[in-house]
Length: 270
Image (cartoon, rainbow, N blue to C red; front, side):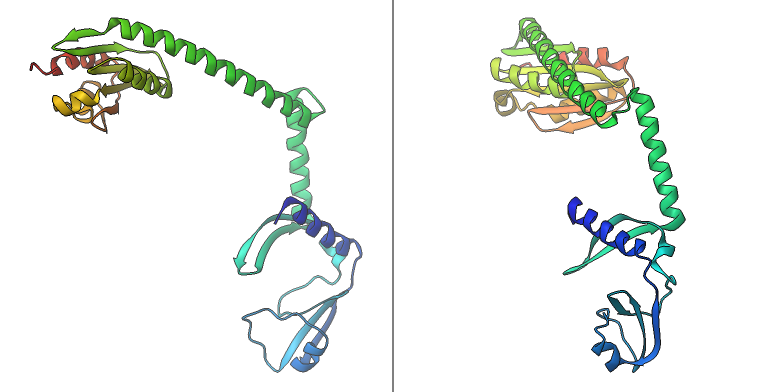
């Protein structure tokens, strides 16, 4: 159901509640009489020859459950959820009377708390403005992170060592995971025969990233997943990935320096 449909159902029910329709209960009538009266019968229910028919205004049904004496006793109807239970059949869940009053009171208190927090009576406008501002700030942070990543990439590329025909880089990098992965693949495309290991700290935890050129995977039998698992022991962690790219996480930040030093010893001698 759409929000519009839910609102329409709620309004229809509350109209009947406010109309204070009286209960008309007929016990022991025949099934034939109930059918002729147009009583609603639930699919799958079994009825005997003698049934109980409940009427509120134009609503007529067969029911063995409890009912208010008049719809006004419901006081207020608030539809809380709805969903499909079978093909063409939906179930709604609602609250009424004192439960509805308590719900409205709590919602009004929440609204007042939001207004006080925002220091504004126009809560919707204030939240909308904050979301727009947050979106702008996120874009600014994204741009700054990208610029920082490009500077770091340039520095890393300049620091690459040529060892046995391999461009080797081992460094600790202050970048979030997504940005670090991005520049890792950029370096992989820009430097021939690249073998790089990067250390970083994310949310207080050490991380390692290993990237290897396809040529080294094929010709030197190097494997980033194998290398990263070996290095991960230095940070008391574990990891894995693919032959050309792998990552690891751990718990001992001090082990990052040892892991980066150890990486150099994994360069093939031939």
